[in-house]
Image (cartoon, rainbow, N blue to C red; front, side, top):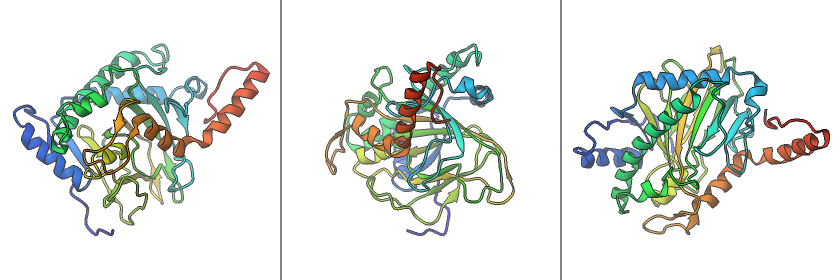
Length: 330
């Protein structure tokens, strides 16, 4: 599918949510069934709060490598710190970035290393969760589920919920042709909230995917400029499957300039994923039922599975030498 004009990525206001719920639902469904991307405004997180979270993110990534390596990425949970270890099937090369995946019950950086990290980040997560509930309630109603269906399926108060926050740092680069900050991909989970900063562009989107089982990539990507404040939202593979392919999880990527200087880029993503034992199947039962855990692990293995052997070899070497643990992916 080839497009010559940029698809509509509407800005949807959540102001007066309860009073405007029917109107908001229509706007969300229209965006999700077409471009698969939209932005949220009037969502309740202030620019000051967003900038404060980005400041903490930068402080974390500015830490010495050995400090960040204390929380190595774990393929089985997809939590922890990774550095240039995510290889997309679309590019077969490592993304030029570092990132930290967090869940409520996972290992976090200490407040000694990054003061106020836990309290500020947890507050940010709570606000992301509230916004996610508003959007997912609208989708549940429109798809014919009970209004709180996705709220229960992705309830972060349960320890088996796989929802995560990811802080990302894309490295500054010069003449980046032939490399990828993040290769062409779709998101694994249900619904992604993405926060960007003014001037740190690079996100590109490609509409046109028809089935969550398809990995065909269109030939035209369109830039989505970075702006502090609005939340960029996209559908993930899991929600596309859950909707019998009505809601589109489209391909996107992050690029640096082929020629010239590209500054550091920071972004923060909140991935609504689901509870492990929840059954993932759309109302029309277009696809066989599968648990959220099965779906999640299969897709994570595809992107990070190559690290498992390296991690096991590194652990064996540490055990033999009696050395402290470090990240095998760094």
